[in-house]
Length: 357
Ligand SMILES: NC(=O)C1=CN([C@@H]2O[C@H](COP(=O)(O)OP(=O)(O)OC[C@H]3O[C@@H](n4cnc5c(N)ncnc54)[C@H](O)[C@@H]3O)[C@@H](O)[C@H]2O)C=CC1
Ligand SMILES: CC(C)CC(=O)C(=O)O
Ligand SMILES: [Mg+2]
Image (cartoon, rainbow, N blue to C red; front, side):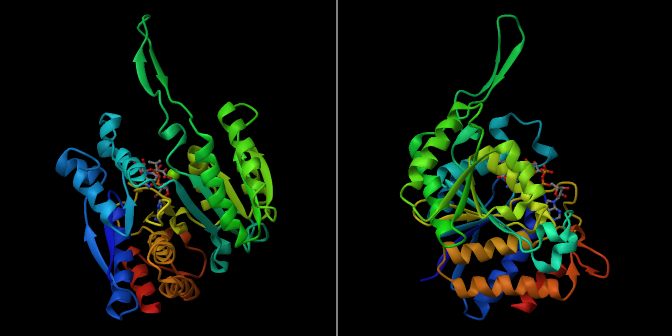
């Protein structure tokens, strides 16, 4: 039975990097390694331009009907003047909420070939393999009340609210504990329990949930310390579990441990195993249209898709191996270029991965 993949290229570098990931999918399809049907739709700024809505009903319906969604990125300066309800980012958040994608998995792995591309000393990052588990449908990104009001004095007041229920915290912690059971059995829960009551509850629920996982070594860390520790000694971490906004920030921070944000894939899963797969970076308007963006995070997101949602682990392994092989060949996009390596553009990097499958 052919698996349906909805392809949402989005804005900025999104179409460029998604085109390379689609090349990989089509190559595997052509040799019969996978059986997938690709459908395209608009999301983000591209959808707003065409339909006046960053997440048209037709796109959300197609996403709900798909076995998996591949998303490039959304956003850009063109749409920044829009009311926030029409911003491209609302399309992305609407997909996450609409599909119930509460569990965002962000692996930060340093390929040995990129040790010199990291801004940190090789001995600090070599062998790095962290999984950041980010809760994706709660927190201040979705909390109410929110917005900007005008006070009687005439000045404006902006408000956003960090909100979590015990069940939302328990649910994401169980995802993290289950993942850790297949890794190093260590979970660091990141919060700001010394200031924010919401995350004080987070810490209590994480501790309570861990009682069901006696083999898991659970620790807790305040988010400011966690950001520093990620740079100081990142290999102390196995699995990190945290809320939406802290996970957003810490995963970009972790990106630089791997050499570039252009290397980090992600999987966003709901309770039914359906997922949306996207690089953790954005639409990179500063390099959009130049053909220089690194497509590897998006290609590695396809490997996560094949592993987590499409039941094709062998094909996923082939993609991971092909990426490693291309790096062994010395090919580098500008963001991961180092002395003695050959610079290639987005399309050439995608072609090289296809040839290495
Ligand atoms: N999932 C999504 O769709 C996300 C969307 N955004 C949106 O993207 C737009 C730009 O946001 P920024 O803060 O600039 O973040 P960004 O992640 O797009 O770019 C940050 C920096 O990383 C570089 N970069 C990102 N991806 C790269 C790649 N694959 N290869 C080489 N270099 C890469 C960019 O050139 C830029 O210098 C905004 O509209 C923002 O809202 C931001 C984050 C995630
Ligand atoms: C619109 C943003 C929440 C996207 C983002 O920064 C992310 O998901 O990492
Ligand atoms: Mg982010």
